[in-house]
Image (cartoon, rainbow, N blue to C red):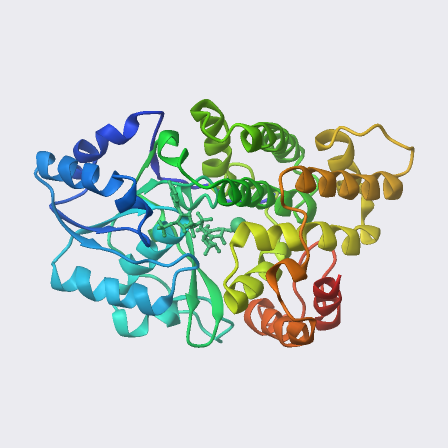
Length: 392
Ligand code: NZQ
Ligand code: ZN
């Protein structure tokens, strides 16, 4: 095992903690760009409350509205220009993963708005390293991506439909104010998309990472047991704030480095998914629900052991005595779980034409193969493999 563990985000967590926003923002700087999405923060009164708290704490602000789900590069550049004009000294995200990710891009764009795409890894020969970024504070309103405790953002260049990642330790939020009460209003479909997204973040490491990292394996099993059990309860009781709280913390921790230290691997399921959400603008969690069980079925013959462990220790199935059969039963059990929360879907549910999947597979390799000619993971995937999984 070899790893570096670093996470400087200061987390304030709890139902009702939103009320501390002014006091905490005052520790960040004098003037922020307060960034929101396409209307929910305004409609639900979160924006008004945030503005009042900033004013009371003596923090100046300018509001940028309109970050899209699957945030666009072009919008982030516009927001970065506003932060420059307004002379902001930090960015404050009030929204879901898209708003938090956009704030990370804005933090970089503040220093170099014309070249923001060069900092985002889109398969170019040299990715420009982030040398400066505005300090970032986040207030998540949706449990899903883990952007509130990780140093990454996923940005779509809308013009070319390329959805790619920027990852730099300069982008860890300095303060993450996590109040599960803010997530009660998330519609049921997005809620379950988010629950599955947080599960996939740790499943990627569980299947693709170093199997010798046994403590991380056990931690991930505990995380997944929690997410699948509490997530299912939340599906039938979405207004229960205590259940919201139970899925919020796994979401925040999932990509913080805590679960993955020593067990980090590739993220093939995310890479296959990002092409779908870029091309067809679908929800990220929904796209993952399409890909994950098919990817598992396709790759598990290569190394059934981690998939068999998933079946026994997470899906809690009794063993049939051989790894391959156990692993396949685990995938079926996952499909049943997805079905039970409205997430067992096919490409037809999104009107994605099968005829365009070869071009989607080509995008996947071009953008994410890191010069290797394959998408990494427990089974490295060629162009033909990616296409075959999409067709499944
Ligand atoms: O835009 P508004 O009006 O705010 O509405 C949003 C949006 O329509 C709404 N919403 C958010 N909070 C709400 C709410 N509606 C009611 N009540 C609330 N409290 O929910 C919709 C989806 O929001 P979005 O932010 O797009 O969802 P999510 O948090 O799932 O973020 C998805 C984005 O994050 C990226 C995804 O690829 C996608 O672009 N990811 C970021 C990662 C990271 N930073 O590490 C990792 C992930 O794997 C993921 O790729
Ligand atoms: Zn994800």
